[in-house]
Image (cartoon, rainbow, N blue to C red; front, side, top):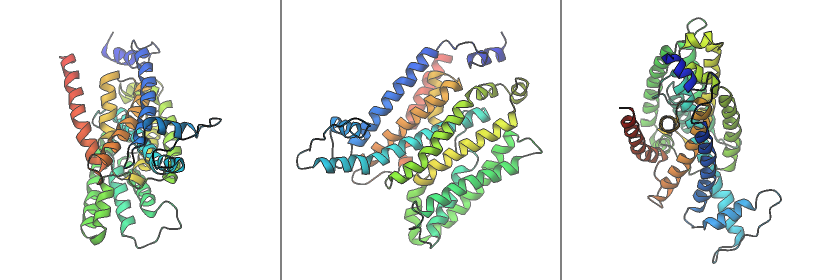
Length: 366
């Protein structure tokens, strides 16, 4: 059996079951349970400590056909407990989970598309475009009271999409889009947009603090309307990307062989770019630029459970959600009552863990 045949069968492309499929399904179910526990735990943590059991009762009582009375805690009334859990903490926790899932899923998709484990959701200018849009939103003297979600996230979302569109058009050669050209165009445009963002931030005067706070990421102003906007975009994008898991496995060979196996490579590239960019733009538009999640999570999943995208994508989605929820808990509690930027936490927590996994993996290979 040659190397390509081993890769095809190891990724599940040939139809033969991968030897570790049972452990991966167990991992998926286990991560789903862990995610539910982490959501309850994160919702319990805050300036007013609410017991895990009480938070569980509050959340469970909101399910259909379940009516469990919430007991007061000391002088805190049951109605106040429900307000803290449902209206204040839960939107933040759910938005953190959605953003983590989106970034990890987009990162795994980009790594498969570019066949590069160092690729991340911001590789082709999403972050820089979103940052420029957000900075413009901070600087424009226009009230966004009638919009409902604010001018900054709208312009950040539009900026992210426009930057990737420009990169795609610059990289396109005839009917094809060479991967290397796409990456180089993204890096070049990202550098240009980054320079513009830096200049606008320096000359922004009193807006500088708000701009820097957005650029380092934060969930402090999370609301339910943001959750309801991000949720459908991430959910639909995740379903589409999961449906592309088998073609992504085939793409790990090379474009010519993938085409011989019946894959329309250019159409697949465009579809993956559009969907991954959409969920990334939706994720960063409300909470700012959060680094490291999109590169560390899928790569850690790959080191632990292997490269089969049928499992890599959902495992990355769940792992990213768990990771960012816990990172947000640490961000809001480590230096309370102050809050640490979430991007700082993801780098400080993610880098050592990633290096540990990398070292452990190297020992097994050599």
